Image (cartoon, helix red, strand yellow):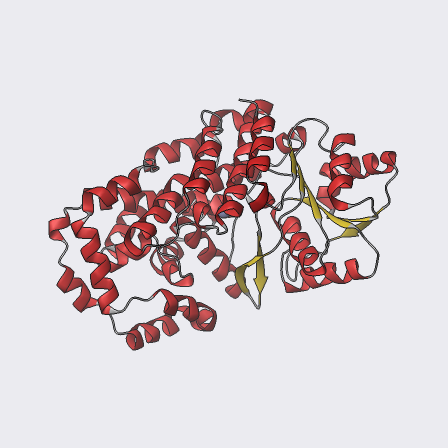
Length: 449
Ligand SMILES: [Zn+2]
């Protein structure tokens, strides 16, 4: 498959729904062709180039050398390390600082040199300043390069904020192959969640009539096809395999942009990862790369789907389940106890998704009466937990919470409490409504901690 040609065709076909105009993944991305694409979509300069010490080494020096050779003006901006962190963080302070730097000059565009964090800082600040963005990627670690959302730590809580996607994304395959092995594993982890997050997306559409886009699904599936057979070759510097991973990451981000929502690429497994991040930031606990956490979260939710498929719908007692639904006041008190200082940030999301007894009855009746059709629809994209684990192992990625430095109690909290941090219906919510989440989580975690 010619991945560059496939990407070009996608950008053309969905031109009206996308901000991104050019994605270059081949050789030359950081040389004259990449600079020409930047000049086309960001104006002739000057450009403000955001780097940190590492990304300068990995790609910044080479790209700016090519910018000099082409005769465009640019200035370097070093993204500072976060508060209490040895690395840059995408938080309110770093976004405001870059926005202020943009306001001090007459830049026609901003260039992010980095992966998730620097890309998020630049695209959010530049969006607010009304300046177009290019991104030169330094690692295939997540699917956000082409997305219209930025993950930002705002008032101590990790949230996603809508913004304009980069006009131009450059991903040199040599740079990607040289990325740290764990960042490569993180990219695979973020993508390996799709069979399960797509099941969540379909589950919500089937039970709640929420929006589902066949167009975005088709993009996800084409992106997934690029990943076939690549996992064992990713850590060996195989450029063809790397092109598959990078292409699939770009497709995943573009699918979110076409759908106008992160739902095609983010289900219960992402809630597990976000929960780990939230506790980390609130209480100074450890956390790992986004995709590494998502990969382990995916093994958990894949297990829940297997248990759901084994369930006999005749055993679901809808009256009993509705009678067992806690009154909101009681659940609210439980949330306050569970989330402590995070409670104010969490409760507004929980409240939006919390069912009334009538809504729960309607949902469970729909599930039991349409069981075969719904499970068939939801199962179309699903993969088994074992096959997902095999791919993660092939790519030398973590497959246990302990490998993320998350202890068993925290893992259990992440799986059983994270459904309350976002109003997005997933298998975690359904398992809870069936009264089975604790039991299934314990069983899944038996060999995942
Ligand atoms: Zn993700």
